[in-house]
Length: 120
Image (cartoon, rainbow, N blue to C red; front, side, top):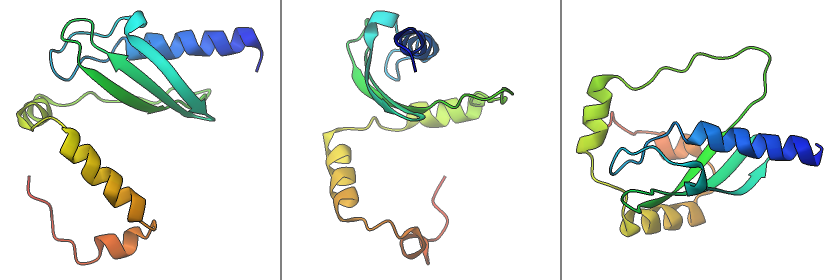
């Protein structure tokens, strides 16, 4: 990939992320609020900081280059309500996930065996 191609991809990725809203205040991110941390193949990691409420977060995105564009549906109004009523991810949640992933051996079959349906 040439330097011009790399810069164009970075700018394109930032443009895509400006269409995402802050989970806290629903403001759109501005280009200067988005910092590309790294990317490997199709996986991009970005740090975002809301210009309105100053909430910070990470965005992990898989960007595939294809000839055909795939239709992606937005959340339904019911799904928006459901997610807005959920508590925000806090430091304890991040620590719990870190500890889980540190010891997780990748065996999803054993993890999900006997798991009953999750509550709505």
